[in-house]
Amino acid sequence: MPDNTASTKPRVALVGHCGPDSFALRTFIGSALPGSTIEFVNEQTDTETRLADFDALLVNRVLDGSFKTESGIELIRALATLDNAPSLMLISNFADAQAEAEAAGATKGFGKSELNTDPARSALRAAVGQPA
Image (tube, rainbow, N blue to C red; front, top):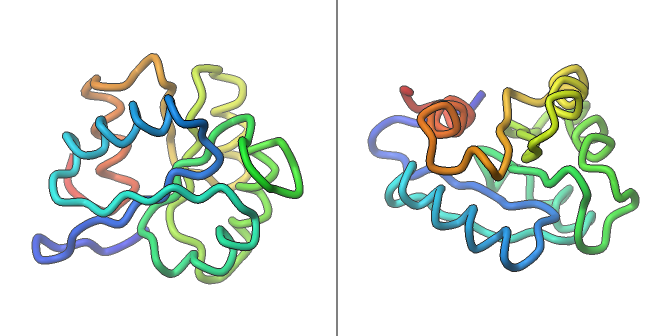
């Protein structure tokens, strides 16, 4: 888990999200983590080569973009094995998908239906190493 102090602004990547979902997530992250850097990553190679650029990757359950798989859980499973992997979090409303992602190496995620809730804010802050 990253060690973000008050002097460090969290860096978050939205991985495999469509435009409307990215906008909603960006708005939520901006309110939960003021001053954070938020980037969209929709390619496998970009995701893998830029891991060190981020404190957390918020991965869509069904990936939109150019990935080797459509499954966000499979991407999490692959990335979790890398030494330089930041916190990985699945964005999904399905409890079984969340459980599978956590078993694959993700931190506790949340669904799009949970945006702007205290549990989602707490999970996001924990993923970037900030107090809930």
